[in-house]
Amino acid sequence: MRKLILIISLLLFVASCRIFSPSEMLRTKINYKYSQFSEEQLVQEYKIAPFDELAITVSSNNGEKLIGAANSTSSGGATYTVEYDGMVKLPVFGRIKISGLTVREAEKNLEDLFSKFYKDPFIQLRVSNMRVILFSKGQSGSASIVSLKNPNTTLFEALATAGGISGGKAYNIKIIRGDLKNPQVYLVDLSTLEGMKKANLILQANDIIIIKPQVNIPEKFTTFLSPYLSLSTFVLLIFQVFK
Image: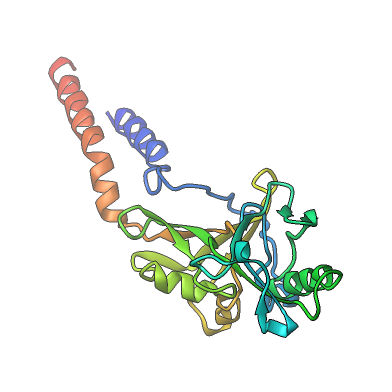
């Protein structure tokens, strides 16, 4: 009898090892070595990335005169898409490398190019489709695409836009960045004042933010064990009848 109870208990324990977060995405191992943000990254501006859409307005005489009606749209400039290889195709100049540059650097490079044809060119560039992906299991398993309204949106601002981290673990926020075949994974702890510095991190295009959910262990444990307890009760009943 005792052996039977022990066996059933062991089976329940082994089975319960994965009940707490079976649907949790992109988990890392217990001793996973996270990437560390450098001081430069913490103050880094947004950098243009492949598939960004750029609204570009070109003026001459340091902004006095708009060049070409084709450059004027309702959004304040013609729109060009950065291709998969980081190049953007522009009239006259063809394809030029632009990914990896900040908005300011890109404007300066374009002004240098246009200076060959126009006097004192003035470039205004805006990234119109900046966004990050946020998974927040603490909010009924919600996932959302958060649009970045300005090129220097911080993690704090993105979390506030998404409704905060209610139901999530403030000390376990992951940021996945870069090539998804070999991504960099960062861990941010917002449960302490020391972690606020990382919260001011400037988000980059297509960052993935994952908020680890809080788990109601008693509720999950009870829900999971119910069918097993019924089975064990049935087994014990059979054992008593035929012993």
